[in-house]
Each structure stands twice: as C-alpha cells, then as structure tokens.
Image (tube, rainbow, N blue to C red; front, side, top):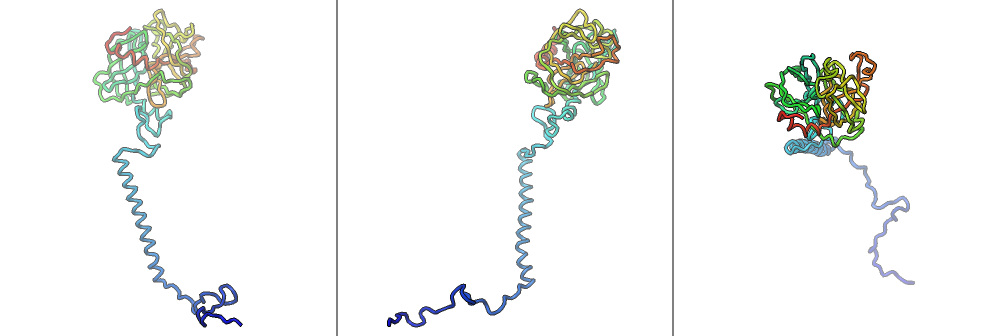
Length: 336
C-alpha cells in the first residue's frame, strides 16, 4: 500500500462549489444591515450637485456660443431674419411674393404727368437716394408738369433729366428729395423662361398694386409710340386710356401713331394694366429685371371703352440691362 507524501492538513478540504447544499465562500450567518435614510440622502447629494454643475456649464456654454456668434457675426440659423446679400429681401421671406412686395414697394412711385392732351398716370422706379426715378418715355411725353407720389403718400415735383424715345426710357429727378430707398438693378441676361416674377405699379391710379406671374418669353419685338400721338392724346398709354403697341405686325389697344420705336422685351403673364407703365418687373431676390412698358387688352379690338379693358396675361417689359446701358445717356440729357 502506497502512502500519500503530503503532510496532513496541507490542503484543507472544503465542500465542492456548486455541489450539494454548501457554497463557497459560505454566506454570512446574519442578514445585511438596512441602509439608513440619512446615508441615502448623503448618497444623492453628489448626483444632484453634478447635475447642477452640468446645467450651469450648459448655460455658460450657450451664452459663450451666443457671445462668440454675436462678436464674429456668424449666423448659424439658416431661417433667420437677415438680409439676403445683394438684395433687399429678408432671408426669412426670400422667394415669396409677399417678401418681394414688402421689400421693393417703397422704391416704386406713382407718376402723374400733365400735358395739353390731359393727364396720364404711370409708375417709376427710384434708383438713387436723392431722387432719380426711371420710367417710360411715353408716360412723360409732352408733359408740362410732373408730380410724383411715394409709397408713403409724400409727393414731389419732378423735372425731366433725359429721355430716350428709341428705347422708351426716361429719367426724372425729384426736387428736394434725400434719403430715399433705392431699388437694386439686377441682370436681365440671367432671366430664363419660367422664372417667377413680381410686378409693382399704379394701375388706374391704384398705388402700390402687386401682381405676380412668370416670364413667358424673351426677346419679343414690341413697338410703341415715341411721342404723344395717335390715341395717346386721350389719356396716354400710362393713364386710364388705351395702351397702344404693336407686336407681330399687328396693333393692339389702338393706334400707335406714325412715330414708333421697337425694342426687345421680356414677356410676362403677371397682370399689367394702364398705369403699370414705367413700373418694375422684379425677380424673387428683389432685383429689378425690367421696366414694364406694354400690355395687351382683349377688349381693345372690339371698340369698347377703356374701362372694360383688362390684362389677359400678355405684358412686356424693357430688360434692365438696356436701362443700365442707357443711364449715362439719360443723365447727360442726350436722348436718341
């Protein structure tokens, strides 16, 4: 018989772990003492303190971010109320008719021109803060006096600076004006068929009337009268009478007379009526892309009175690039 060489007691024997009723290590012979309420309160305080510190850090962090944003001028809110660069339309209203109307209406004026033939009403666009206003030549043709009314209701007497009958453009200057809001002249070469547009003017003397539509076509050959001849003697194209012009070899809204001029126009379906002449055609960034000059009235061919005339969605505007190129000539007083 072989004997074990291990000293007795070198490896104490314990019941096997997980076998039988015994376990290792043995459970305490007494239940754990219940946690006191005071201890629980002490345990919660550090958690509450940490939460308060976190909130304070968030407030300080937010305040710091706001301070940095204000200091650097960075606006992280894409829907804020800032002004769209290069335009007069607020960021929050960009691309809306209401936003364009609110921004540009103060730059559109009503023009009342008195001549031996009577009085005509048209519109104009303020382009300098000291009172330079662009309009159509046919609105002013033959006028002996000119009165201009701003969107605020304030009125000025105006003098003719220069006219260009071949382009149907004119420039007038308000006497004693200063600090006026001025329109932004856009780029008519960037206009595309289908672009949304807004028209603002004073149809039938209704100052500040806003209509909207799209660009229907480009480079339309439109012919209008150079002087106050033809049927213009009964109120003028800008006033309550007919608004004659030629297009496609046909005359619309009456007789244009013997002295006419033809230009390339932007066609729009934005509603234009007598009195809109000389007003603005505007893109959705609030930039002037054309000067409204002619419209087709469906009732003109049946001999009915002008009071029955109305827009049928065929209006024309002189491209603003034509105006920009012609401004030096107008300012010099040397028209074509």
